[in-house]
Length: 430
Ligand code: SF4
Image 1 (cartoon, rainbow, N blue to C red):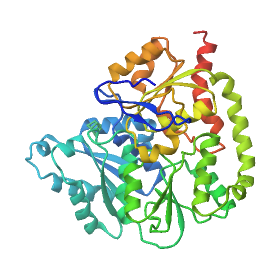
Image 2: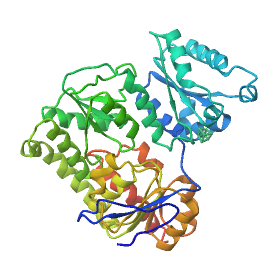
Image 3: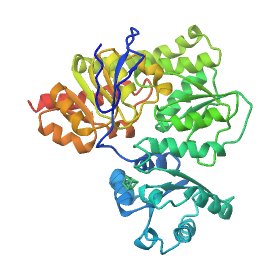
Image 4: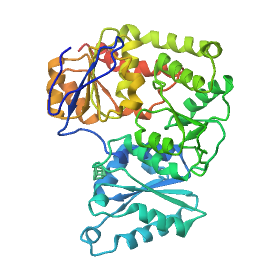
């Protein structure tokens, strides 16, 4: 198959179902993506006793406010300590200023149990040592409040990588345990997590723990007998930090769609020595419901050509679901970052005709979109309306991060998210 060569070398990656290599296109250039600060929007909902304090500029405050929309009016659990000109010019001691802001915040909000100091581009550029600040502030405020730091800057992180850094920062704080346990890693909607934990309990795997936990102080134990099962594909740093604490990574596809959810649950069951035949009967009813729900949208999606632009690292598992279960034709699957270890089980299932692109050179990518004339483009809000104006149907990718999409019961809703823009265009007679 053809090797596409652009800005960097374009190696091939194993996969393609029939052992044919997939084409991997690596690009660097202008990007149209969020920085890691955006992940605060779902992380603060997951841990209501935590507060996320961005140490950054007014730009950072504007970004988080725009991403959070109306949530900013509801007693937010995030804010920005804005670095002023005096801090940036080195006239004020930024550490003293930060300590003062944190004192004020903790006085006003006594319910905070964990305070995340979130690094940004400005704080990194002036080399403000937030790890040191977190240690100093923790010593001052423990046992009431623990202070942790991580980077969500655009220099270092893209969108969901903010969650990866936040969770990796919690790993050193997890208590040690030698007991056998299953740890689900990555934020999912509470109701989705409950459904999946109920399925695990039916298989006899009870006492499943989660990272992040629902209460920031309820940290799950970890040790050599902990198996980690990732709920989200963008957790490279967290997975490696957990492995460094002795935990075993269960590699599996991600729980998107009926096939993904089944393979994900079976991989965990197998890691605990359960035979597939013992697992199957417990999954059958939910699997049937999921298949029927997806089938409702298959007619609309089958044969339609799909182009995914890089955004969240969810693109490869989504492409696998849309190809396998909805019959869509994959033109290009863009991802901001490709972790081959965490994506191995997904890549195996992609058709050899799909091009995977890692990173972005947005102008070149848009040229390919225009040449391919896909039936549906998955992209961010910055590109969606312009592409609609050029006559292409688009799906906003950010919705995929904020909506409950994992598991059997959500498989139909997931397919609907992609069928909806196509149905709307039909109704409006484009
Ligand atoms: S962290 Fe960097 S990219 Fe993100 S909003 Fe602040 S300045 Fe912009």
